[in-house]
Amino acid sequence: MQAVFLDQQTFHSYLPLKDIEQEVDSLTCFATTSSTEVLARCQNAQVIITNKVVLTAEILKQLPKLKLICIAATGTNNVDLNAAKNLGIAVCNVSGYSTPSVSQYVFAQMLEYFSQTSHHNHNTNQEAWQNSDTFCYHGNGFDELNGKTLGIVGYGNLGQAVAQIAQAFGMQVIIAERPNATKIRDGRQSFEQVLANSDVLSLHCPQTPDTENLINSQTLSKMKPSAMLINTARGPVVNSKDLLSALQNKVIAYAALDVLEQEPPPADHVLLKAISEKQHKNPVNNLKITAHIAWGSNQAQARLLALIAKNIASFKDGKVLNRIESQE
Image 1 (cartoon, one colour):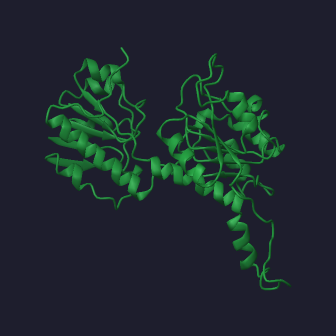
Image 2: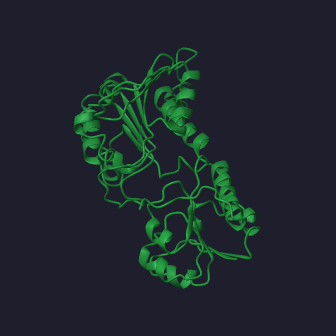
């Protein structure tokens, strides 16, 4: 069984692949793979491992030896599932590997904002403490998470893990019902109520037609002026232009994003331009953007690779593990 990993560079290079190598006769890894390179690299492969490389129906039809596609992620939109089904190609994904990593990231951003640790460290580096008349130097001060309200949009494994940590900090957790829902489930509040009552709004919903542009000028206007927005879900859930306007006009106080609509994003992306010291004399200072890394702790990446190996082993044994079916 020959396997090809099309975009290994989406993982740390030092992470071992021994679990996968033990399940196949050979494993060929490529740092990245363009759409024009897929066919040549996969002609003899029975197994393809792809994180974000797109496998279209046209490509799959030209790979007669292919038996299994292992998506190195939870999302499956980069593979034509209907074509794979019609061609008898099994497709597996992975899930649950990143829950500790993402929930830790959410609170890293939250704690940095409310505890102002970088600000206080800067004060010491600038010798403000050393020149103080008292034993402490308060600077901007900082706020406690205890007693604040965390609104969660998307209450799957990630949302639940974030809620559990929030409760340990003494936060009040409120769970949003789906927008425009006609019935509010037990333990939830309407989407509009959550917007209005949250000190921090954390997004964990999937990207669907119903959630694209969910956070826009209208929904942002319903939030507290002191509110913080965190997006570790998908970029298109937030309207970037509307968010920038809301931040510039103090409609909300702060935002921390780990995802954007296009990844990697163009250098002239409206939000990246706004925070760039190279492009602006006065960059926006109430926005932080990281490079889609919330999922990717060392441990989460190792768990993901181990799950891929288990998917291959299951397929070899004729069993079904993490199998994705088409919607036909």
